[in-house]
View 1 (tube, rainbow, N blue to C red):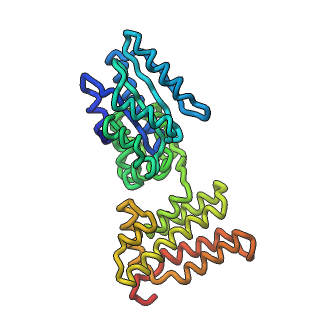
View 2 (cartoon, rainbow, N blue to C red; view 1 turned 180 degrees about the vertical axis):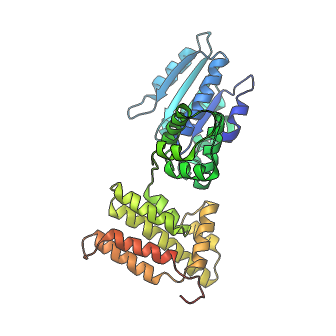
View 3 (cartoon, rainbow, N blue to C red; view 1 turned 45 degrees about the vertical axis):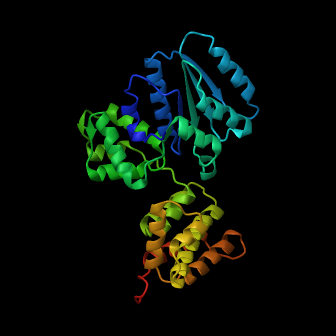
Length: 341
């Protein structure tokens, strides 16, 4: 059974716990908090014995089976934690998991912790068995537009509040780095009393701890957010991101938008194009379609991208970052299709 992360706290208030749990997601902080909550509730219900296994190279599933079965000889209730950092148990591990989720050990809770799972892992037989027989919690980072609300909720827990402008600033300074955001929350709880936070003092106290990757740049381009794309380009450059990675983000966005434009021009349905390009998220589909309809044909932009490729490879003279900035600006200021510049 899938359990939304926001319903986990209420679900754990019950007097019994299901025998098998699985927590996975792309945000380490939220995965950690979810597993901590399950672990704490298990301890409160008398599951005092705890055994932790981490699947690493050379891990013995036979040893896990022997030790977990031998534990059943004891009278105490126990919690077995199985951590799969890579999210792939392998053939032997998949067989063990399939058996355990269907036939749980008595007086035992099995808590499986995974990292981020790709679509192949989510469609595998062992994960399907988890979804059918266990409680599965997906702990993904909130989308960028929900980060101010995330901050508002977390501040409310420590009886503090902030203006909408301050919430947006806090979200911007900690985007992509919720572990750092939690540390900043703890700092604010220590520095300031309960109630509304003073904006100027908070701006001084909270550092810019945002963590970006090239895919964030790609997404900003797809959304047509020129200001954000420029900020990401400069930040990634300052952090030492390699030119080929920056170029990948720019080119990937341009190819998707150009492909959508060609599809629309042929009168073909965009859903076919999205399936071919493995674009599944609805918000990304909407962003691509909006940009495809807003922008004129991208011949000039693709030519500029090809020049950036030659510059990155040293085959042509030029300064990569200023030229990339000009390209992003041209997309941000391009007139809608069908209108003169």
